[in-house]
Image (cartoon, helix red, strand yellow):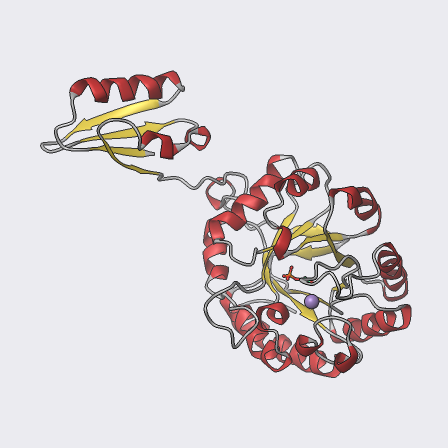
Length: 337
Ligand code: PEP
Ligand code: MN
């Protein structure tokens, strides 16, 4: 952290600031220029509330020079992390595709989709059981029954299962049954939930919040990791902007940014990012080129009658077509599918 003092600050104010930093266990490196003094602060600056230093007499500016996330930071872990999801590696050279319906609706629906997406090359099956809906009157998911149907579909298809958790009270159930626990955009900053998920070892798929910065997203990963669970996979799913043609704005630039800042794998969800089935293909392929480690795509047996997110859902034939193109594209960017 660097503190820049205003020109002509009284020496007593500088000394008192330095003393207080030393009291907090910080090392201080002072440099006196012609106009102003600059104070370099080294130590556990993450624990300091830098804004309080702005209130000190003579302080002009306070700047952080290091990122506040440590365990998620590539600086301290230069190699890409590969997260094992029930035997499926996420990260590394191979792209991982997660596919399935927005919501689990019935056994026939889920098992049929599971078979189809597996045949096209999906490695993991998704399906919402507890649904975070904007309206309390909308379909809320089959809840525990949905999780049981996911287990059945896993048994029949052999695909590990991914589903969203919304409440701490479900952690035990999810830890026993689910292979990859999804934290949805709306819960990205549910810090109590994140902390509890840090106490288990199940991989966590952490979606980016609706209006969250990359740093906030990585800080949420840090919450999970700081409790001891290193198995975090990030998922970019579009953010809110002024543009309302699409459901969200897919932030493709977040992928190289996250890859530079962090060693965690990052996948892209072009379905929620666009809200339109006909845009999913181009955004999925673009995500691969941008360096994503995989995709999460919504597929439905009958999108017109889906209980949730039909407009962005692909038929299994449309999904198969994307997989075919992705398979041909992957080697161009030195990936496998
Ligand atoms: C989902 O993946 O089903 C979902 C609700 O996505 P998000 O949290 O990104 O809106
Ligand atoms: Mn959905």
